[in-house]
Image 1 (cartoon, rainbow, N blue to C red):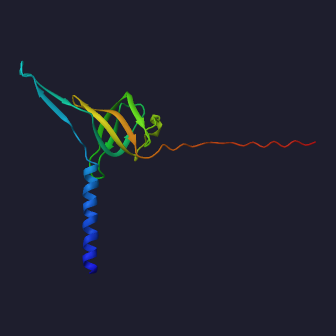
Image 2 (image 1 turned 120 degrees about the horizontal axis):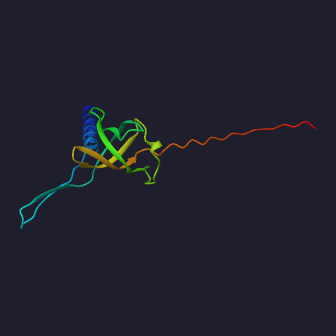
Image 3 (image 1 turned 180 degrees about the vertical axis):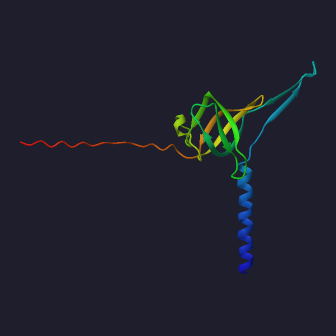
Length: 141
């Protein structure tokens, strides 16, 4: 009986691991249309998304490195001044919230040989540090 319970637990864990890896995988939507009059074929790629972890980000560059799985190689994603950074609740945050090892979902399109990021949704809320300083002055009568 204990062996059956252990087998069920292990099988459930394996199924969960497969489901998580599928959820973190990249998705691509490609639409190919052919004009019946001219016979011209047009391929259009819609914005796709990938969930993973930011590996490196340098503010003065035009790209960040992003990894979709712990064992996957990091991929270079280019960003523009129009790239939006959002927290988990959907509020716009600054680029200072983008740091290495932060889980995120990246929404991107492919332009030529570049993967261009349209939106980054951070999985963790941006940490806000509030610095308060108190000064006490004592006067003698």
